[in-house]
Length: 196
Image (cartoon, rainbow, N blue to C red):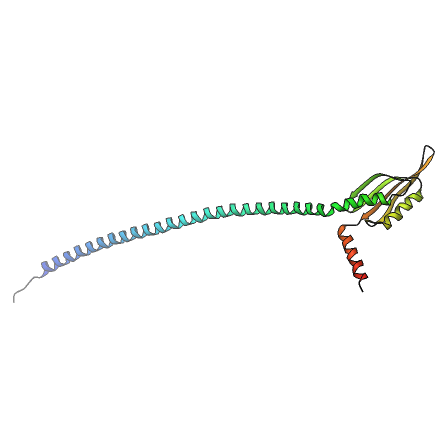
């Protein structure tokens, strides 16, 4: 029986398969490298794009922060202007009150009484002066009680002294000035009470 040796053919097939395997492995490594490189480029592009978006957002946030600060400055300025306007309006409302005050000071002044100092703090009026006697100071107090624009008289000080043989009384009286609003409210109350 003849013997056939198939080893060289198998050896060649095995070598061929090893070459194919090596070529496939090299191709797989090259393909994996290309995929990794391509993936890296794509991811880097997305990172760059996101960084650009973040930078734009930061710029917009900084711009909006500047606008917010400007708005706050404008609001503070508006509040200051409103406060000034309120003060001006209050002064405009109170302007007639000073006229009434000076008019009442002249009307309530009894004979023999002289004002040295008239000082107003808010609605409180302080009057310092000289009187021929303490009776004249009492008359001044009664006149303040009967006044339309002054109320709640309070005697602070009365000192009698002789000034070159003339007896005089130094006095200090305080009273509350009636505001225009209080006067209007009082007039409305009187009008309501007068109606049947």
